[in-house]
Image 1 (tube, rainbow, N blue to C red):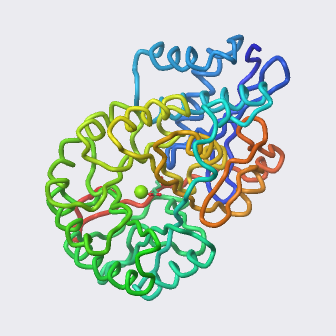
Image 2 (spheres, protein in one colour; image 1 turned 90 degrees about the horizontal axis):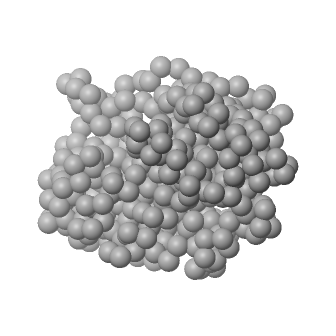
Length: 401
Ligand code: KDG
Ligand code: MG
């Protein structure tokens, strides 16, 4: 079962995706998502120029050995580009192993721990009324959990507020600047959730993403103000390079905390998990070293009653979504999965077996990951340079996005 070839496919059906296709000498192939939003071509080159040549001739069944070889063998360790590339290889190898075993990947990961996985969708609006309407739309589609974001009065644009039905934060061309004021934002969030609880009661799970924009003490204050509204979680309240800063937030609020969509290694969340400074870990297959490494993070988290809540925005391709669902359905300490629907073009390029019903998803029972790529169609959507916008304080200072 030797690896014969590795192909890196870059396409843009609605947004950019990088996909690794590993081909074995037995005619079986596996797919891995390698998309790093706004820095896509760096991972494409890392794979094409540096990783694929190392894989040719290796035994595709040796997933853990290949993981360690790419991680330790490179000398440099960690980092988003490296770990996204390793994730793509790992994901493709699990896909191959599933196809070889004629079993869906989750069966190789210990089997299903649950019948399906609860997902949350993104509701947003320029006003509280608009956000309420968006939440209503998700509830009527059967969602049991919804993330809610609303524009901050007085600011022209706000992170997390979509322009259409499919939310896509990256923009083609050069990254625009957006204005930010933590003071105005902190005042605007509690009234949004007071209104949502009034309209929807407490049966619907509500989530909110702060997107690393507050200081720990500001986040503590916001978390405390949100306590009456019993959020499922407050996400990314502050940047987490300093894991200790979550201790300060924790001292001030019982609002559950989630973090980790930008983490790429278990070392990024060791203190957060071991000291029980968070409730949900948001590391994801594509950016945290693949299914193999994510399972190690989940195993550590399980010891401390921290549950998983993997990132699942549109920049994570259907290949990552499928892998995430196999992981979610199998690990014991699953919490929730983010699910932002892709555009129709994306879904056509990546036909998949996973399905949504009643606010939950299932990876399906096709052998492997149950996702494919239509290469001919993909080639009709060439790469488009696109970036996330940047945030600046009202005086022009660059702020966390
Ligand atoms: O690439 C960045 C996006 O995926 C991110 O901004 C989305 O914060 C996000 C989320 O929670 O989905
Ligand atoms: Mg987020």
